[in-house]
Image (cartoon, rainbow, N blue to C red):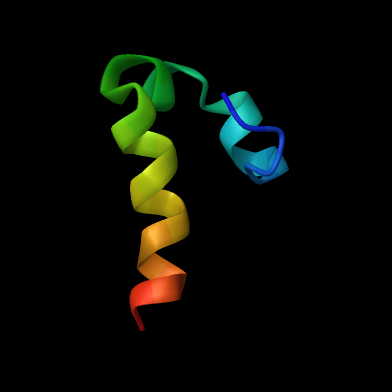
Length: 34
């Protein structure tokens, strides 16, 4: 759980918690991939 994740994700902890590291990586990968 890196503190670099956006504040919006904090409220949706249900999403990242279920996906695990994948959820956090996807969020940061989307903007980086583009």
